[in-house]
Length: 289
Ligand code: FE
Ligand code: FE
Ligand code: ZN
Image (cartoon, rainbow, N blue to C red; front, side):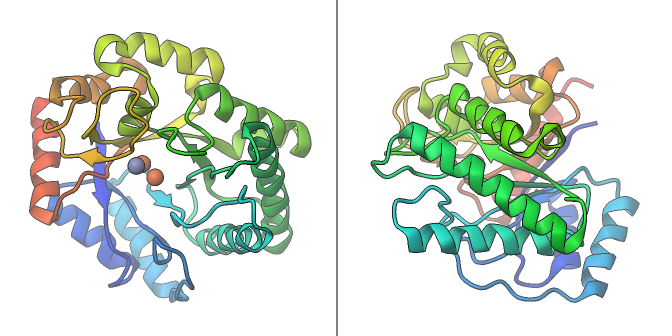
């Protein structure tokens, strides 16, 4: 069983995202609970969320991978941006308590000149503080929070597996052992390629390095993207599957890799609905059952 889908718009509501994804041939999806560039998120009627939950069960969907806003930067240098980002994170997590057993992934952040170490510390501290607040307000966290592997563009934190490991380790040491099950990683194929992990030459080696640092048991979801640029370019420009420099055969090997089975694969390729439907069909047809 492969779980594959793409980013869908929340503009028509929650159930509408499920029915739309089904039409495209997918059985998981990602969405921004608010405008991806930040800003206020609408309140969601309980019935709409309940209807989506029922739809997901009835249609045997995999876990969803909800995406935090791009503008969120919990390790920003400016206090105001940090505070706003923290509030977005808190608000998203509270809202998603109504949609349990899924994933919430976000970009760890940019340290903007403060240094990787300072960034890692702010991210871990903020995560633990926000999770504590959410749990006081609405009970045990019901979704797993995933840090996304980044392309290492500019001052991005999370371009190296070691950096994500440091954030997870620090969060666990600050928050306690229970944090091990609240946090994980979402691997973006375009991002790790751009960051310098050559999955085309040595996919097994890259996964072994992930396992050595973070542990594959903490890899919960993947973003399946080709890249417009060479390995190590630190650019972060996604490309359609097979039209970029990673190439279709490597991306299919990722989907088929025995160590990655059962996880949701989310397409974030530059596509319209037809393009997504085609990519989903291509991936499914290339999978050896
Ligand atoms: Fe992302
Ligand atoms: Fe991504
Ligand atoms: Zn990206």
